[in-house]
Image (tube, rainbow, N blue to C red; front, side, top):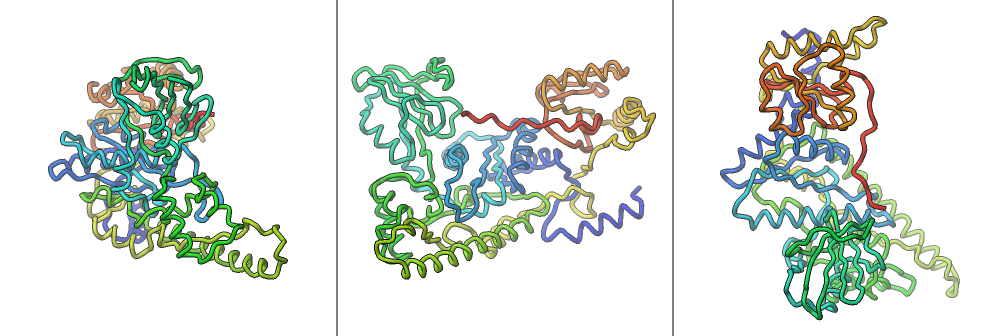
Length: 497
């Protein structure tokens, strides 16, 4: 039974929920709920969209979904890692990830055989407009073993789609041409490809290691997508020039952005003028019109805050633009000290959604917040797991004894016990500690299918970077941090240098 204090807390928390909500969904258990919603959408071929608060949540939910719902196809869309109206471009790996994600959404439209589908995106990514899908469909080049390939045509495609030519290919978005050998690191790929040409015929395609440069297995074909969200084709450059002049008037010789794009060159920060390359922009939701939708708790307030920040950054740029123009008009004609300082910002609604747009999307798709605490209405039956910090705080606290009692209680209630550790090495150490403490029936498991094959009473120990556990109708999940209190540093995805 709930205590009066717990009831008061739940009522207070429910006051913070605006709109539809699914209660009883703590971190970790949200993967079960999202997976179930995606499976329910199979008959009408819908995609389930879940919006998270930030990049850390995006990584965690994607990892938990991959573990607890391996039958689902998952696409994640991150936001740019730079501020709105910044002078620098977003990280190339993030841009490549975004283009790859949008390309996969197009592939989903064309696939006949399908699995449950989930799109994960941050609120910042959801609020940012994207390139039109009809344009992205045309920006694709298929390369196949045995086909005839014009190297000059390939080089033109790579240049206008944001690839950089180097002597040695090591990162996504790079290519190298050495006689009849062409190395390409396609956008969104983990490893690059090496094409061996005999004349103009593709004799072989091999995967190679970007560090050792050694070739590995052979493949029959692959597809190239853009490495950037814009292209430097003649048509796109002309669109940009016309749009830039229409928005900002006559352009002087001291505008390096305009000059660079006119010459078909990249310019740091040019991504922030993305809408000028296209006739129109779309939202990610245009790529997947048949949608069911949920979001993290507090996404609504995060969206409002983000939209206000975008407006603030825009107003700051407008203020600086006005001041720069005034200073320039006062300066001598031969004074070049102000060259390149003027920043012409495009309007916020060119690249970002307004509050009205975002509210309309939530209403259209019935976006429901996943709320971690219990509720009186739609409740998924999950709650936060046991944290043994109270036992650890006692001078003579027996954490392992309390853990044994807790496991026994969960098994008696019919729940499968799962303990999550941060890495394979940490799992081995944890298993040794559990075994030394007299906790029996410990079974290391690599997948959720392994967990489901265990008998009730057997304890699964898995590798999963959850910080806090949860309890659901069928599972009691504990984490290494719940038991030991040691928060190990979580390793982010390795970046190539």
